[in-house]
Length: 260
Length: 379
Image (cartoon, rainbow over all chains, first blue to last red; front, side, top):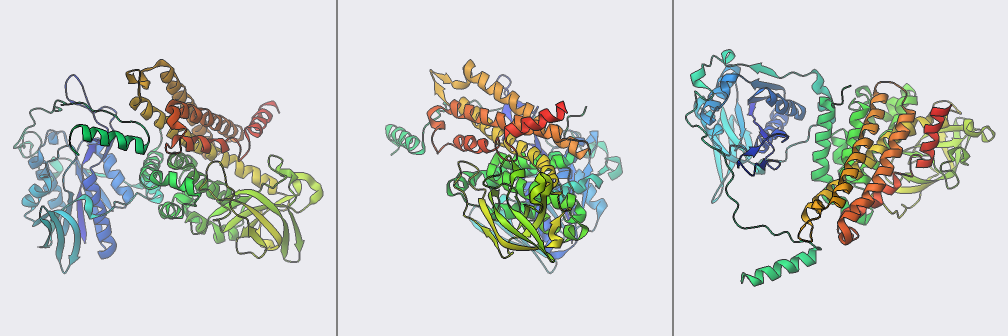
């Protein structure tokens, strides 16, 4: 099987602070990580390779520093890593991003399965996977909690509000991964040591035959006008003490507010 | 001078840190309370190659730099000091002597199984009457045909309960002082190898520290490590590397306590504000941060010297001395920052204080480290 996984390098949003005056994100010193849902996609690809054999290729569209995320994917055990990077890609919305990812996937060819994370923790749109599937004309199954490959089909259980839905999709297909899909493996020490000899391949817009109006800000259908933190309403009270003491405190407060 | 970690070192740090946060730290208090060997955690670490980090690939290890191993011990210890010392004892004391002094046959027979964690290693040096004075040991090994017959007892042996292989030090020549000591690779299932029950310790309680008794224990003569009379040299060499790792353990313990102190100082309100606003507390935090960073630099430099193939005995002793004393000092301070709550078993900071103390004692007491440093300078 030839499996492609699309990942994004994102700031670790648990570490992000808000500038109290401007209400904007302070990104300096915030560590960059592989988007959590994308890690589940990577893990699934590696598990499927263990069962069915084949190759796992990881791809990211991003600035040069996104190479670090791709190298982390190499340390998890993928066979090949590709960074699609170009100044022209800057400011891309999900539509323009999907265009660029589609271009590299078409160039690679013979892909049986594309795996993406459900959504990124910075953008939170959950749109790239579906838009990419449309560009590739692949059937798409989103919010996957289980994936099996049988007789040239992806048999996927997906999370919907009313429960779990099972969908069969003819390969090649695109599936988006949720946290419930698996437990991502830690990179082994041996794989980390072997990274010394491994390279991430780079492709520019020109390498993929993409023009500036197809990608980046120019190729975007949407633009981010402003990012700000909502006003904090109410206050936070920290309770201290031992477990039983804090419990008593909580009970007292709930009783005071007539909640219990 | 380049103070940056390599990609390998950063990634090993990040991987072990994440593993420790998710798979070790949540269980550390219970492991401490029960005094239970963390078998499941050790198995998971073994599967990731953490039990053979500095062992070369040709012998089944991961072939990483020694500094990568040191960073791993620091990060493991930050989650649980017991787990840190279990891996340290197995690697620096149980495996490295075979790597450095073993015959090709001994390396082939034992190193892959140690590096993969299939067997756990330990180090049988200390005796009831021979601690700092290791040369005063009374365990004997007498050659009888094709076997050495070993009689004696060891005490305070880390991993003893859980290990399948012990490097045992015994006198082959009673009259020759330290030059009469030899080292042997001994497997647990050897008749006459008896493990005592684990000590009930103040700290690192999940590490199994037991006595060993050898009653007419027969060990094939091929199992001598190095040459007869080289035992003391082998032990000292193992401890040189091991003490850099103990420095890393102390660092991890100090770092954990330091983080707890910062967190608590921001949350605890007294006199209408977080205690982190008071200069007294700020100065404690500043001193902790500075000492920990100094200890870290000493430790990493000692590891770097070893990786570079340079002499590191003095620097290893300095790192272990400084880091262990800093860890003791600052875990006590961290309890102080927590006030009364820090004195209860419910908060983890008391465990860090209990764990820190042993780092000033084992693998060479602080007093012994000072002797090593001084003799390196004044010779």
